[in-house]
Length: 199
Length: 199
Image 1 (cartoon, chains in turn purple, red):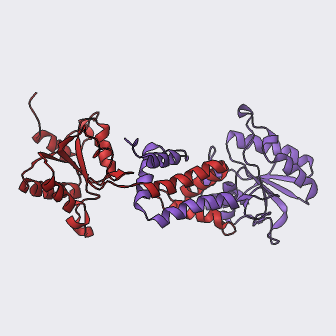
Image 2 (image 1 turned 120 degrees about the horizontal axis):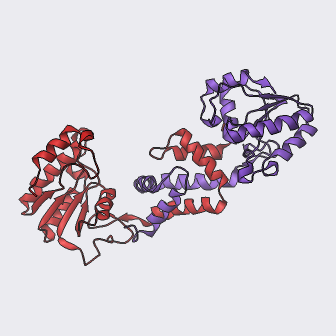
């Protein structure tokens, strides 16, 4: 039925590629966009291209940034002797929202998953080891997700970081097993940060 | 936290304007787009602008179209003496998917709603009356939604269309396919009982 509307059908197809957006939702979004003003649609298209042009990863911690270093790495007020390891930038944002941590971060961009063929070299683990050598890190706080892959990654990193002489802590249990940090409320994250324990 | 990332924050803000997309979903979509290839994001931005440039409304029935007339109005195989009235283009597509109707359409782009200040002049009702004068319409099938506004619009149009000499029908009201009677609301069951037909 959309065969005579190639531009509309193409927009529906492109929107369907977004995570959690099926064919019906894509059509609903496309009809909404059809009704909004030209300038609103142009603003969305421009925001897409502008984000893609400008956003990159911090060369030190691999959080998202628009400069060489992210906002946190370039903030002299952060406790540079503490390093929090997270899987994704979203997880970093969740910890920042808790206001319970003032150190630096290292974003792995994933977790170890041998079944999916994801090993240490596929994550930012070599860069983490380099930082442990180059920087004066006293504490490594492991904040990978409390999933099978996240726990395995935490155990793996605990061993490596201890070999480098750092004190290693893990976010306290209190965060339910099987959850993604990204979706946990700030209060729970705060409890987990203050209750972190040495491994 | 996204203060140092104006382009990312702007994309999240633009995505949040979409219906059914809250702040968290917008952030999730933005992170997804951050990870996809440049060409995928460019394809989405281009599809947005292209749709907005090309899609307009059929000058006869007000369905979406890329030409002066939509695919249905320009199809000589359709039964031009039948006219189905729907609220939105999406409703037209739902009827087309049923393959039960071969006539033409008229899209109102809304329903009467005095409380919201939506009267006949705010919908494509004047254009409908003009079509009833200009075209040889034998049957008007009212397919507005089965909501308070849709029913009121159907009643209003039934009166107007009968004055123009057309036979007026309404989509059957009853129990949907695949339902358990137990879970159907009393109003629908009442309609189904009073509209029962002999087998």
